[in-house]
View (spheres, rainbow, N blue to C red):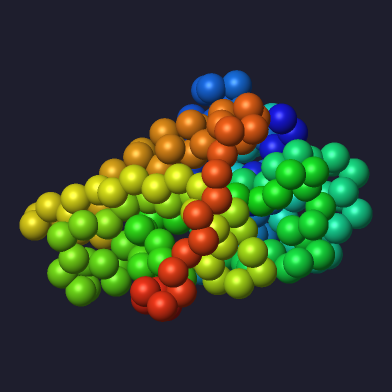
Length: 201
């Protein structure tokens, strides 16, 4: 399949590594522009960019994907994979791939929709979280569920340790899901909006 990978944050690095290792290397990576970071305010690339560059994957860095609709269409993608990208994809962009777009989210959706599910799960002293792959919709993390796995939260977990563990678990689930999509064996389960909780920045 021709995959276009939308990602910015460090959470998306391990899933991209696993996709490449399993033979699903994307035809392009779409990420946020380089920005000043840390106290030095030196301009730095997003965490996903060095990995994409090392594997000679085409990199595009628009402020918004709507700016590069023609380029995305020319890639003739079958599937968009979106992980910790930092920008909501419009209905216009979501209509581009031959199949659809999927998102790997570090929570048991519909709980903790939004930008900071790991932090809010810890803040609320949850004992269980997980990873979920959904079919993307124009809303915020509200598309139908394709795959989901629970993960315990240990008493000594921090945002860093839980982040890394969910990234590894999510990478495995993502590759399994992409394989099922390629074979046409996935099913879609609508989320229960009445059970949704939110994890803002």
